Image (cartoon, rainbow, N blue to C red; front, side, top):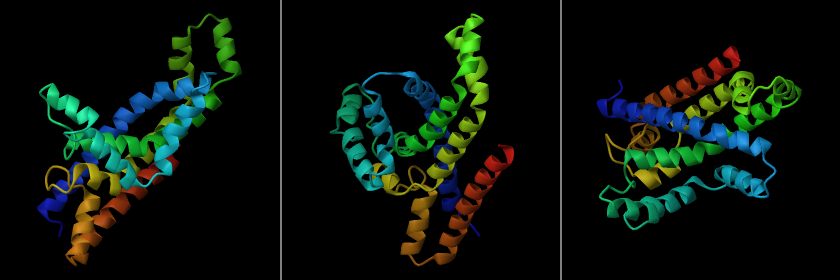
Length: 218
């Protein structure tokens, strides 16, 4: 049987994955389109920065985010000066960390889809006096639906198993920042392997179903 605390951890995990994936898709869509079309010299710098989470240890990202978002950090301190709470050890902080760590998993499918969607068909639409906005929404987005599906699933599934960056920026607060991966670690530490197995099996099943649905629908 799964305990109420584990159910809460699962709910927080699913909520985190949904929120971070939704925001990432909104942010990464214009950024990916800009990277595909720009000739700016800063393009290479932006691409390297976007892919940096793939090569950095999650604890390194989490550590610097903790410094940045904490009460003495540039962002956290500014928020407190304005009368708000800092973002460290909060669900909002988890969202920021999850977004940064999952950024490459959203950007790469979108970049590939947008690159495939550019070409002659857009030139034809331009000769028919279709505006850039019309071309993007009526041609590029429909042709890139597989890329959006892949990006969303990869980000969501990746968020389900995040651990290092989450525990650094969010800690291990039951009911607030304790996600399923941290709950599994706690169970293993306490030698409660049955509970750890139950949670782990749920995460594996969710990830497998998501990936299977992506290949089926695509």
